[in-house]
Image 1: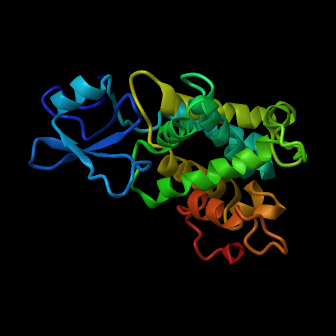
Image 2 (image 1 turned 180 degrees about the horizontal axis):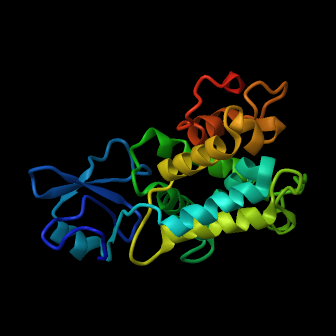
Length: 253
């Protein structure tokens, strides 16, 4: 396990090979594991670092986003313009889809692959309200990536012809996906996704667009005051613009 703490200090958070997140319980010598896809009736796992390593290793410590990744992600936001938020949702779904297929065809075990993919994007801090909104982001991305919608329901064909070019900037989407892939699929580390995205998106919008920044990075269907807003407008806005320095922005509704 590689991490950024001193040798005599145990890691605070880490992720096991199942993409279950663990956090240290102060003063106990144990960690608490949280699997958001597990039944609410099942008690959380509690174990020592040695026990977790033996049962679920290799482990990856949760580490901050690297500076070069932040720069690349925000460059992709700039490239996408008003397609930035939709492109990010598309990128999140790409990573979710890859995780579902990591160990073979996702439909070989639908529940297990869906749970693994969910944990892939929330393992850094699975109990946060930000992580709870991540499912809305990749579900929106699925709507964009499976395009055009057809009566046949041929998912493979829709994925092959997607994403929706009116809403997704493909190059920017692919660059964002590469950053998300580094955060979630690196062998030696894991970067918490939801809160990092909230910080990077809001910081970019504030620095480059000031008040009204959401209007500069999100298309007309994602505006809070749209006549016919997307069902994903509110959760995307709540997650990705939660850290803006302009909370009194009239565009927030």
